[in-house]
Amino acid sequence: MNYKITRKLVLFIVSLLLLFSLLMSVVFARLFSEHTLEYHQEDLKIRAEAIASNLTEFLNSTTSSGSMGMSGMGMGMNGMKGYMPYLRGLEQVAMGNIWIVDRNASIIYESKGLEIESQELPSSANEIIEKALSGSTSFSETFSDFIGIKSLTVGVPILNDTQEVIGAVLLHAPVNNIDSSILSGLNILFISAAIALVLAILLGTLFSLKFIAPIKKINKAAYKLSEGDYSIQTQVIQNDEIGDLAKTVDQLAIRLDEASKESSRLEQSRRDFIASVSHELRTPVTVLRGSLEALKDGIIEDEDQRRQYEDQMFQEVLSLQRLVDDLLSLTKLQNPDFKISKELLNLSEVLSDGVDAMKLLGADKEISLSLSNPYTFIPFTGDYGRLRQMFMAILDNAIKFSLNRSSVDIEVGEQTGRTIVKIRDHGIGMEEKVKAHIFEKFYQTSTTENLKGTGLGLSIVKEIALRHDISIDVESRKGEGTVFSFTFPKEKAPS
Image (cartoon, rainbow, N blue to C red):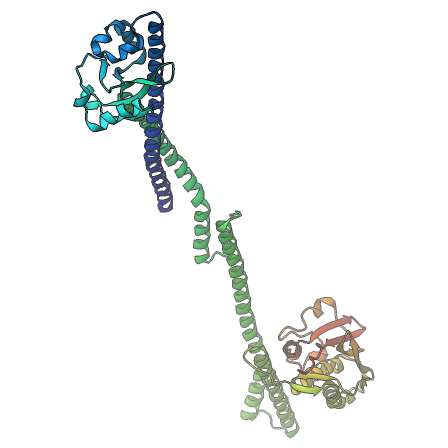
C-alpha cells in the first residue's frame, strides 16, 4: 500500500522537531552558559567578599590587641607571615587560589606559593587590580596563564573600619566546573530531544495514518465513481476542509446517480417511443398494404366494394398524416432549441377562435359549446397558433368523450391576478389511475371514442403549456365528466 503522504507528514514533523531542537540547543547553550557564568561569578564574588570581610575583621582585631593589624598590609610577604595560619584556613573555605594585594598594587600573598610580581602581569590583569583598589568589583579570565589552568578571577576591595580601601582580594577559581555544567545541561537537552524525536516519529506516524484515513476513503469513493458505481458514499463526516471535500464527492455521487437514472429513463423513453410509433404505424400500413394487394390482384371486382376499399385507404392515409403531424409538433415542442414565436395577443380572441373552430365537430353529436367570458381583452404574450391548438385539442377530447346532446362549458375567470380557463365536459369521466397517465405519449384508453386518436394530443397540450408557463389541473370522476383548468401566469407590465 502506498504511504507517500504518511512519509511526507512524518518527515515534515521530524524535520520540524530537529530544526526546533537545533534552535533550542543553540539558544539553551547560550543562555545556560551565560546563566552558569553569572551564577559562578556571583558565587565567586560572595566568597571573595567574605574573605575580604574576614580579613578586615581579623586585621581590626589584631590592631586592637596591639599586633601589626592594618600595618601588616604594607609589609610584603615577610610581614604577612604571622597571618599564614589564618590565611590557610581562608583558602580551604574559599575553594580557590587567593591573592592578596596591598594598596600599592603589590601582591603580598599568593596561596600557591608562587613568586609573582605585579610588574609581570599583563595590562589586562593589572586592570582588575586597579579596579579593586579603586573600590569596585570586577571579573576577568586573563590570569589563566599564570595559574596554569583556565580560570575565572574576581577582584574585590579590602576595606578598613572607616571604609577606606587598604588592599584587594583576587580569588581565582577554575572554569572546569562551568564547562562541565554546560555540557551536563546540553547532554540532558540532547537526550530529551532524542526521546522527543522517537515519540514524534511514533505519534507523527499515528497522526499521519489517521489524517490520511478519510482521504483514502474519498479516493476509494472516487475510484468507484469512475467505475460507474454512483451509489457509493465516502462515509466521512468532519468539520474541516477534508469534510467539505467528502461532502462534495458525496454530492457528486448523488448528482451522477440522478443523471444516470435520468439517462436510463430517457433511453427507455426513447425505446418506448420508437416501439409506440412502430406500433401506431403498423396498423394503417397493414391495412393499406392489404387493400392495395386486393385491388392489385383483381380480387375486388364489385364497384361498390372497390369504393369501400378506397375510402378505407383514404381514412388510413388521413390517420397516418395526423400521426406524422402530431409527431412533428411534439418533437419540435420537446426540443429546447426550438423557439416558438411569442407576441402580445388577446387571450379572449384566441379562445373564441378555438371554440368557433370546434363547433362544427360538436354539431355532429349535437353537443353545444358554451363560452362564458366576461373579459373582452385579456393581454398575454404567447404563440397564437400554439395556444389555439392547445384549446382545440382539449375541446376535441371533451366532444369525443361527451354524451350526445350534452354540452361543453368553457369558463374564463381570474384569481390573484391570474387568468383561469376551465373546459368542462359532461362525458364518461375517468378513474384516478387513468388520469395519472393521460399526458404520456401514445397513452390511450381502450374505449370506442378513442379509436381514431393518435395518443399524442394531450402530450402536445402539455408541451405547449410548459412553453408558456401555464399550469394544468385535471379533475375527473368516473361517470361525472372531466374539467381541465388552465392557469396563466401574470402578464408582465411593459417596461
